[in-house]
Image 1 (cartoon, rainbow, N blue to C red):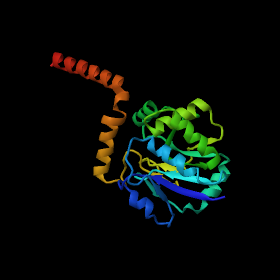
Image 2 (tube, helix red, strand yellow; image 1 turned 90 degrees about the horizontal axis):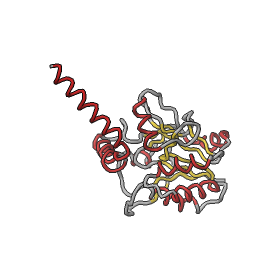
Image 3 (cartoon, rainbow, N blue to C red; image 1 turned 30 degrees about the vertical axis):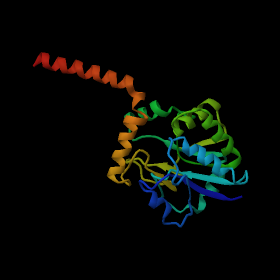
Image 4 (cartoon, rainbow, N blue to C red; image 1 turned 90 degrees about the vertical axis):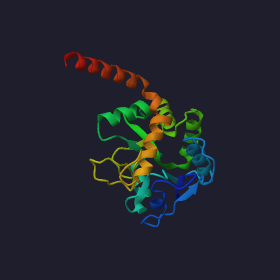
Length: 235
């Protein structure tokens, strides 16, 4: 049984160099380099093809190439994963407050046990990863994380766990001391250059997820107009 680490990127951005040239000399395969980017589901297609070259019992760890660092010694990843007694482990997507958590749920939905999965960091046995990727791709979702949570939610995957205890995967939160082996900064965080964060925010708002908040935007405009009229009337 072997373990393999991989990321899908078409070019260098974010903290890619920190991931590849990590402090623990962990070899991370890079796939997708130089290819045309068609959308977020390209990662699922690339990962599906990658994991099929290995035996069914091998472990594969998928890491977001622009957002992730190796935070701690990864030598115990296999032992920790085995102790969890699951086939697939995915990182937990949770924000620092109610507003962020509302947005996360609104965009991606829930996976299981009231939690949202973040598909930026996944690991599992090849035998379970292969059918998982096929079914996620079959959802026809434009976003890999939407597709992942949709697949998880609709199929009651008993052998999947979300890493809510942050033992292997952790998504950065400003109010938590990092303890995961792999630490990611989804959507932009203090480890990413400011220009990268701005580009991420603008892309998310105007091209990826902004349309999902049309109702909230209309309600906000109505409330602001009402408050504006009330303020002008009494002043």
